[in-house]
Image 1 (cartoon, rainbow, N blue to C red):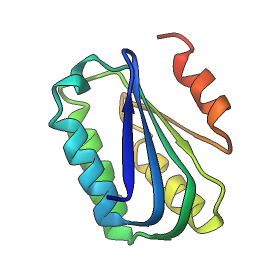
Image 2: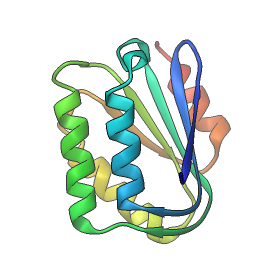
Image 3: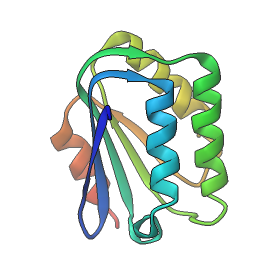
Length: 124
């Protein structure tokens, strides 16, 4: 598994490590949406600062954004913070955020975990 979930009462911090593929991100999202705790959280922080390789296709971006937009039909409010510094990953993250622009989910990009966490906790 290329990610680890760290739950708390208000949200989820998902830490990705090693090599991350589009399938890993799809698996992480599908697992999350199927978890009973998903209905109770206000934020997700996706931390990609510990990865060494990232391989995601344009179709993977479409799939992940589509899954999240469908989830927004039943859970209308969620903050999604993405912590990333690798240029190729930032390209993907920007495309994902563009596809989420019309979603009720808020999506922001950060370069460090502390800023992402402070944003996630604000106004919840």
